[in-house]
Length: 233
Ligand code: ADP
Ligand code: MG
Image (tube, rainbow, N blue to C red; front, side, top):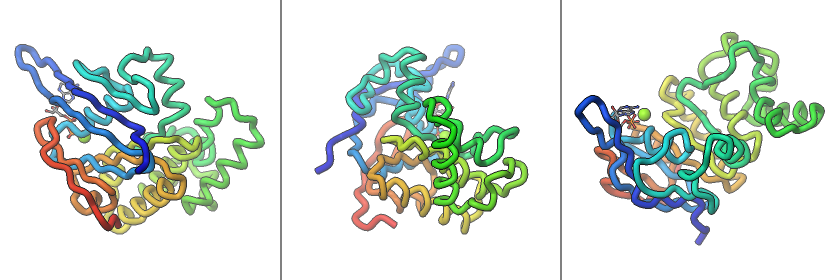
């Protein structure tokens, strides 16, 4: 059995809206193993994104503990979080979040600049990644010169270039057509499997959840059930 890289203990996130309190994440306990592909599945408003944001340290829990690679994420300050994310976490977003003034190559290299990797090595590694996601010919294109699927390929290359231990993907195929969706899911899960990286995918789409080893069903901020997938796609 692989060891747990993520441990979530009694985690709650309550938002206040005037007099109302919204229990976006309501008492979640969950362990995720190193190398596991895990899906957070639930309908809109079930708390998927909030839980992912808590794991990434983008939000602070109202209560509870989040331990990733033996470090308490909920106790880190902004500076510690920035460094922690740089060293351990990759992100893929529904809306790609590429910098529009930079080329595909430059977008992919960005995390390496923060890590102070020398320029020659940056270019080599970014080229390899763009090749791996099938975008060799588009290295010098800017986001608005690429299709949605191509932009998501760039963002996958960027997410994996630092060799992160954990990759978070929030509705990564939400803006893509069916064929591109499967290409993207094959790519992202293939990369994670190859390097034994832990992947957490947020989705409302049952078909996408078929790629995961384990499907965590969320409803009203709580775990409704956990399904083990014996034959992930
Ligand atoms: P999902 O990603 O599953 O669609 P979210 O995590 O975005 O769900 O939201 C869960 C619940 O928390 C929803 O009821 C949403 O309206 C509420 N919520 C999320 N973010 C905030 C916020 N910043 N302020 C107030 N309520 C929020
Ligand atoms: Mg969401």
